[in-house]
Length: 368
Ligand SMILES: C[S@@+](CC[C@H](N)C(=O)[O-])C[C@H]1O[C@@H](n2cnc3c(N)ncnc32)[C@H](O)[C@@H]1O
Image (cartoon, rainbow, N blue to C red; front, side, top):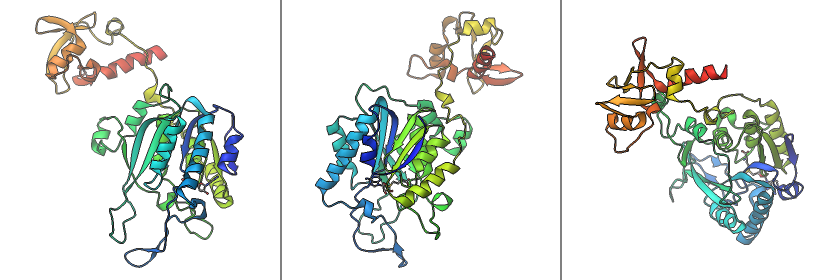
């Protein structure tokens, strides 16, 4: 399979594709925004929202029929263990979600893209609409879809401060993502220097979606390509891509954008955080000299707790218990066991070193 950018009608083009041939779909369809009249900013200039021809529908029935048709094609071409993301605003996301469930999709998450820099409600007549919703779904409840859980943690800057992140703190990625709307140099301009597309999505959003829900080499399809943000980021992350867009201008600019993109060959692209680690035991690490029988294990605050035994258990207050139970006791937490590799340190050259680092050093010798 090689990547391609297709100029054409998305439903017709998807009809030409094989059943169950796509790993991941990202769709940013027409929202049917129903924008009417001219909207002015507070200082009087005209706000250029989305009133494009491609976003016009005659009625709710018309919009729903279109939505059902393209979502049915996506369902057919998606692999059984693939997944699909659809982004929408309040105008369309409820229709889309209902139709998805009628077709048979299984919803995994809905994600709120909380815009750091939303367009204000210029007239002050209702709440400032500062989010859009992404629906993440599979073909069935049984789908074994890709989720790079640890990669997602690496991308979580929403609930971890920059300073904590630098210190190594990682937390589960949640379903509210704080990302700025596409602006500045990232925003594609036409030859007259005007904004090319009214709804170009931020690269950071696509980066998260593709990095966490696909693997290198997977095929990512976007049936509504626009400026080809999906294709550009798929290429950056080493995925194949199929992009469909019917507008000549968007197609041309988008194609050039993708051509300029290069594979970044990063830990995120390769999802190294999610690679299954070889299981190693404390006994073999002691035998290999990475730990010393009867050496002290410490908490991160330097408190000396117990000594490690050859069988991997710990001698603590006169009893021999496994190191995970001992970790829970030493930390005084409610749980009976906590992962000792997240808790214990040893002394190396008078410095406290997490035993998980020592384990990595040992694993590295196995790979050599
Ligand atoms: C919401 S925009 C996608 C923007 C894109 N995600 C980006 O970051 O630039 C939807 C795009 O779908 C295209 N489109 C709408 N209906 C289509 C159809 N039936 N077939 C192909 N393209 C279509 C429009 O021209 C528009 O560029």
